Image (cartoon, rainbow, N blue to C red):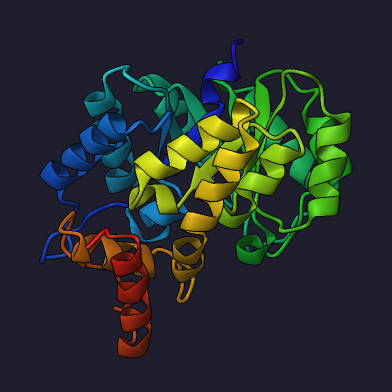
Length: 295
């Protein structure tokens, strides 16, 4: 299993909605094409930034299928197929496998806070039900539990588990994984602001929010870092850092969709419980976009 094609800049693609709150399929296809034209290396369908939590199962399936179809093998496609119920995660994984996804991103079970053994058995069961590479997603701030370095390294020995999206914010934990991982196990930053330091420590790239707004700049930064061009990568990192921070001034993906609406890339529509940005934060975001000459 060649996992190297998942190195680089992966966009956690937003899901555009129309004024009725329905998935805007035409706009979604245009965003996919734009991402590829701008140099994004991998596209993630139905991550947190894609508002997967408020889509029905039918919509979840449809969005994954649209993205796989529109990409048409031009770049790899990861499909978000996680759940807090292992059986449901397995069903989503099987669907993604059937429609031609290239890999699976599976978030740690949320709310029920399993033990480390429970986390191991959960991901093992998922990996046993697909031939695709599975990437574990550790994001304690949303799930309520942390996948420890010890558990991650244990999972790295399971066939089909190809890597981890690490969004714990714990550099000590990330370094321990990087120090001890097998050579074919990828470590991808799950935080935009951590992408540069994680790659400097030997990481393999980023699954990104900011790539929705600046796919070209981010892919250039990642390519420079992976090529050892550290001065160039550092320059681009600091250029993008204010926008990386602004994207989390309110809950993701509220700011990134607001920014993309200002850029003319989509209509600014959300599903409850997400609501539009407060005006004072909108102005801060607008200022950052103007500084980057994105609007």
